[in-house]
Length: 207
Image 1 (cartoon, rainbow, N blue to C red):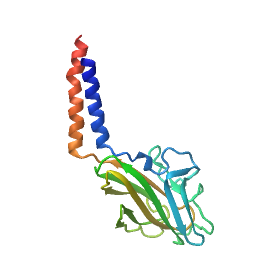
Image 2 (cartoon, rainbow, N blue to C red):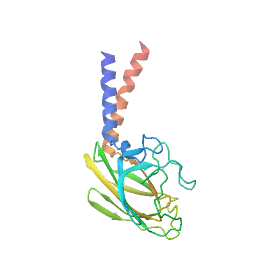
Image 3 (cartoon, rainbow, N blue to C red):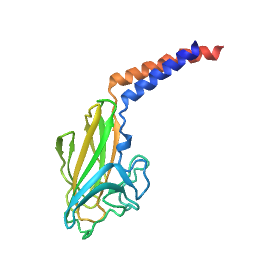
Image 4 (cartoon, helix red, strand yellow):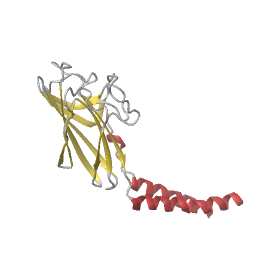
């Protein structure tokens, strides 16, 4: 009997935790893939001296100036080198990029998005709502040594995010990660489930 109560209380606590934590880990750039592999959750299109589109690819050897955020998220670009034909490291905005990611959220709890970019970050659109970002001034290369952080309000279900950047065509990439911000009510439920385990564990130890 006591064992079944412990199992039920553990399940309650776990359920509350999952309700408080949206399922978005699969949408961190480069999550769960090897360097040089395509990211199934992110696509990119670009225009400039050349145009194209496809799945984003995890960068094999990011420049040392890019923050190392593994194992949470990784830098992705148009290809494994993060450079395109005609690209020159002169910070001239000759290429424009649109990075698109789709993810599923288990709740409507606020979501914190952290973005690193190289070169210039201009705006992002989340579920049809566009937010303009003030780009860092020139030179712009490695323009985000300190990441930009935003709070998003996801829907319970499918969500779509796109980011707009420009660059010089040489080592242009993004790194995006998400962190849940559980609502107080969800955290209270989680706490209630965990507190319920305490007396049962104590009784079991006395036996």
